[in-house]
Length: 210
Image (cartoon, rainbow, N blue to C red):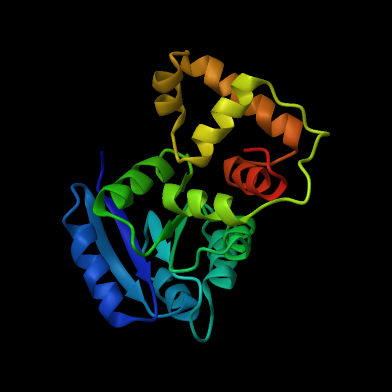
């Protein structure tokens, strides 16, 4: 794998420096820049290219949601992973709607950071399993949406997508061909009206599909 270039955006310098050290210890990953807010990031991107941005949400001057929208409007090839302390579904929804490919909590592990990087670089998405489990415990829809009828297999695939499994991982876990998993994923998007995997996860949590 080619070296993945990463930029860290967070207004806390101690956190940035700690994350920089951790990321640079991962094979094929190199931190090429830091920014303290969204405006600083946009200035940085004029002179420094990157593959991935780890984006905090709450920052002065320009926060992560606005910055994500602006970055992807100008640099759609960049992958953005939210890295935050917020476990509320509202922040997750905002970042997904803005175009983020991943959502991690700041108490994440090096292994999870590495997994998230690998997946988003292959156009997959990654959401912290701890976050998904936490949200599922307190997020109780008033009633399940019965207009969306999923098969047992589709629910299995959806649950694994929510846990951050890639298509290849789902294929191995369920003992099905990658082509079959692609078919199930396409059917899930069609039935729910979600435009991509992040929106699918957001919808699944919101209306109680999993």
